[in-house]
Amino acid sequence: MNNAAIGSPLQRIFLEALVLCVFAAVVGISLNYQLIFNAFSGKTVAVPTVAVVAVPDVASDNAAPIAPLPFPVELDELESLLAAGAVLVDARSASAYRQEHLSGAVSLPFAEVESKLDNFKQQVDLKRTLIAYCSGYGCPDSFDLGVILLQAGYAEVLVYEGGEPEWRAAGLPLVGGD
Image 1: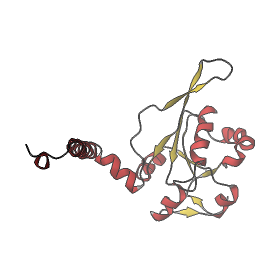
Image 2: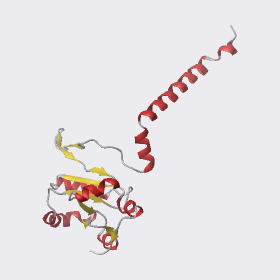
Image 3: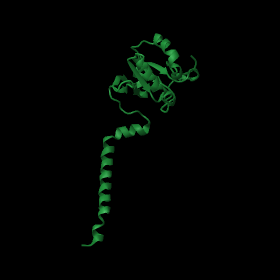
Image 4: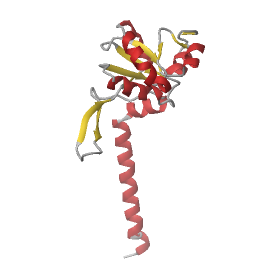
């Protein structure tokens, strides 16, 4: 038998591995095309109906009570949420809020949440749905504020990750002042 016609075993193994990888990639992409499309278009992915995380307790080796996390919400969902009575919460600085903010939003700067949370709780009922936002997808303040608001007793807290930049790009109204 001629070795040149058969090829080396290493070449055959490499070719088989390549075929398997291409097949796996095609199957993976075909099953997750919407997830991939959302990732490249800057949208969030679908979330489970309940998002929780177990926080380890340092004093003992047991897990502490499960802490809820805020859910992301898309721009196209905001209109119906706001019509149902949800409250927009601006997590940006007070000066950024005064300059421009989403129409109808209230200010609760993440950097000042410790000093302003009690006053906020007196003004906004714990049963209201809250939608926290900040300066867009790279800004973690809205998510962090959402966690604090959930810990403070608010039942439903969402995070609008697109924030002020996506709102502006969509041509929706921004207002200035307090």
